[in-house]
Length: 114
Image (cartoon, rainbow, N blue to C red; front, side, top):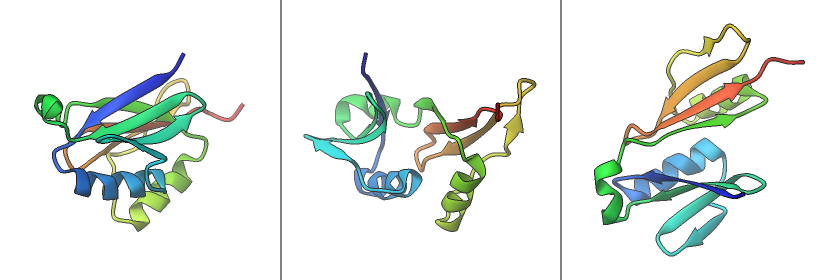
């Protein structure tokens, strides 16, 4: 199974810069008006500003699992991307919400070491 998680944005130029910083690289692929970042073997985050999605701008919510949350947050902070406070759940998962310029939520979650 493949996953394509679409994040509608209002300003593609601004979004491409922001997501490039967030993922640490430019989009891996561009198909038409959609810019895709591969985040897993068969999983992609797709960013576009198509008019058909305008009513959904700012409403996306995704969670990405990471193994080095502190390093990711330090890299983002160095480039001016802020985040909400880091939470630690009762099962040891560390979770933080990062909002893009449109208010779309890109959460990062780090499982506890085994």
